[in-house]
Amino acid sequence: MLIYIIKRLLLTIPVLFGIATITFILIYIIPGDPTSGIVGERVNAQTLQQIREEMGLDKPFHIQYFCYLNRVIHGNLGRSFSTKQEVTETIIEKFPNTLKLAISAMVIAILLGLPMGIFAAVTRNSIWDRLTMVSAVLGISTPVFWFGLLLIFIFSIKLGWLPASGMGDGDILYLILPATTLGLRSVALIARITRTSILEILGEDYIRTARAKGLKESVVIFKHTLKNSLIPIVTIIGLDFGSYLNGSVLTETVFGWPGLGRYAVEGIIKRDIPVVMGVVLFGAFVFVIVNLIVDILYHFLNPKIRVK
Image (tube, rainbow, N blue to C red):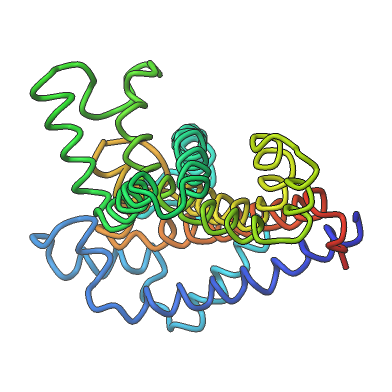
């Protein structure tokens, strides 16, 4: 197991190298001057040129690219063009906020999605099954930003129960709306995958045998079926959780949540290259780690799956 984990961690090096290269090229070829986005359009050409030289933006592409890689290899993601703060320090500062939001959203998604999927499976082809699946489709197809604005309108503006934006002093009331918004899509996905996976397992011979022995239906579902249905469910949870940790751009922007997603949006708007590159690289690393944890969980959920 330890050798497998080390191999997977070593594989992150070429992955991060590829992502850094592609992201750097995309940022470089986008039209526009990063200095204009930072100091504005009213600065004269001489001042802009001076700022470009200070930032190293006057150098050829390959020089900028290798200078950036050299800094990253030494653990330095650079300084923000606009705030002059170290990108690494800012990411470390904002990541706990994103982590807090991601965990809350995933808890909501699991607590709602899993029971919905089980209920739909055990009531297959009934009106309750159809209503549950229609709700899941609505959840998947509803735009996140629209659902977030709807929650703000109802619970903040009309009812005045919950704050509309920010995270205050860490009060849980500030977390409810953004976590619910972020978890909506995962609720729907988990419900659909759970239903499909359980129905597939219910058709297996050992389930018929368990029922033939006279076991209670609850024992058949929760002990014999659900456990063997968890691998695709864990996969979905891992993928969604990894994407949340990368920074939930829309949700954090709508609710003014000071996490990585909002930080990335500010960097994109200002064409702040070190910020965008730093968030992308950090997000890719987090995603690889989350997928590694999911692969390890496979082994514990089903010992027949060997780690190689």
